[in-house]
Image (cartoon, rainbow, N blue to C red; front, side, top):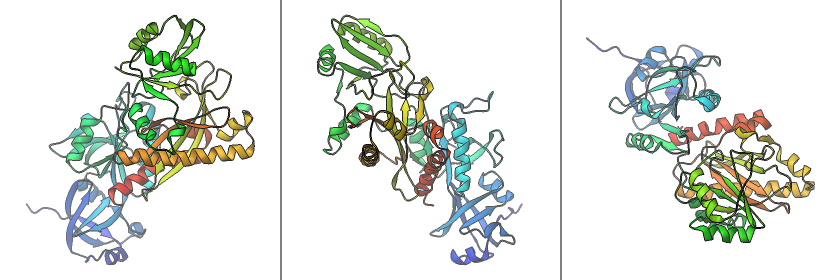
Length: 439
């Protein structure tokens, strides 16, 4: 039986600009799928929008795409490319709740963002990939904002945005990323290495090194004793981790040490460094934590830091999306919002702490310049890095200190400050995906 031919309706202006011929046939590529189509002149206005084409239901079924979408179109040698097709790698999906958990709202916003850029997107978990068929049984939503996630088989995408988290750290997606790479799929925002590796990298740069708190590996009891003698208060952290898990603060007092964990409200008194190390072995699932100088911004019990979100745009340029001050809950040693912290405007926090307007302007400028510089340095050693959440501390004298980098930053801090800022924060990963895909 003769195979039914599939038409790709394109406006006559676009047919001419792409040097195509009406009625001819050519190969069309979406993600990693290639199909043969006939070039047909569009008889409606769907195709009159710049360099995008409306995908008919028949063509969508053949391409493995949802119905009712428009895609960018470009010519690549003798074939046409439609897209981009972007996959978002998630850790888990709950069928009972029809949800990706804490990231569900963010993922829905990403799907809206890629549609606005005339691309198509889906969310998937590692087990959803069918390597033999080169498909992914993934989740998508249509333009209806109240719609539940639907599932269908997509082609392998052009680009994958890695938002996979394990229970303890942003790791575990290595094999999935390697499998996708085997088929030519570019993944961005993978691991940037441990906190210690990032610290050592940045310490090599003379313009950044003065902004780094003293940091060492906790190799022995002597390392702890030495740092506490010098700084009186230190933070002990697992080399990789997120959301403040496993962090311990140690404060030296006469004849004793006060120890407080990130997930607790009470202080514990220890008489010797050996006792502290024993506690660390219980609290942290790692062989060698890092020990870092404590920097106080206030004399009270509220911890404050500053999160700067830097992202790449569609031109592959690093831009500062925004800065949020994060104020920890009373008595907490971290500022994480999930433990009761809250986001506020940085200027308001600095003003409340007695800084004058000229000082605030200078600090804000230094934060942004330092964030862009740090992003560029980390990017030089990472592969396809599209965004970073960079955490800074500011001491009572106004000195800016860099704390750590997060390659999978959340958006909640910025949502609490400005919805416009959040829109940009959601849009830019999809803009960068367009760049990586060649659109």
